[in-house]
Length: 419
Ligand SMILES: [Fe+2]
Image (cartoon, protein in one colour):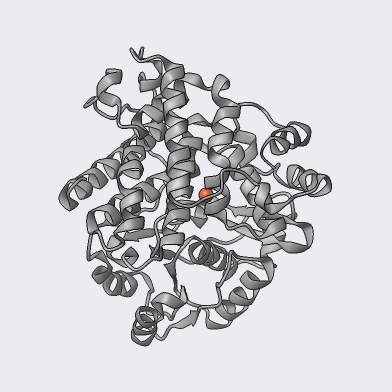
């Protein structure tokens, strides 16, 4: 296991690469055990003397109350599930009344996504539904959002590094994104100490979301050399640290490694898109309430098998990093590739590509079992009509990055194989 200082050095290296390659990411990225202590000063500097609107998970209410007390703040703590249109609109109504100078999110992906939408809609008219891709008609933000400081308290979605808020529209049975460049949080404050109390189930689901995001962004049709380089940095961390986080929740090194991997996966997805597992996970969540990380973790191996011939080199490279086999594949220790330069996928690999892919997928299936996840969707007992609805609902933006171009018919065939 890497030491804390090694992980902090890796984080600095990753941030330097993000800046050098001009990937979209928060203006300020702070990573380190104990970094939460910097929040009060950051809030004072960014709020412009105005009140602060805090979106907080109930598990960190004491911290949120302290912050609210110091900054004439208001707390919204009703994010008890993945955000819906109704829930976000309630939070927005409260924020519009307060007219805050700054939004702070303290929580997991649902909390951070809700806060991104609140930051944008505090200064813009309408309901969040009006801005959702494929649902609403508004395609621009008239006014810049309020600045938003994101403080994740779980490792998983990397939502602190993304410019979209995923929101469910229950009556339509879909989850869609509100997405604008300005919705990126201005500051991502990453303190792995905040994740030490996350329960095993949420740790496992979050970690599998991270793993899925790192792998999908590496094979997405929208991938970039710079994002692949970050994914290759994150993948070995997941393999090393995720089982430890589940078995020894207070292991500080493992929690730090997963928090870094989660952040990197967010940068990757914001800049390179995702693929089919995320497309279907969105529909499973909206139609059947399957938690996002869990859905991703179940779908991941089957999605990789389905796509393996369409992205063999990219997938083998990513899985070699996951397996920590860089040493065998000839590019260990090489500097991170820069955009426009030759990337690892184009270098010859002495180990057969197919063998790496097979070994990698089998290892992910083992991890799935070790973390107690089902291997397929059969436990949901989905009938033909339900599968058809899922296939239709899966055609969001993530699906458009799948290496094999998908439509509802092909997605239905894939689903029938695992349901
Ligand atoms: Fe995800």
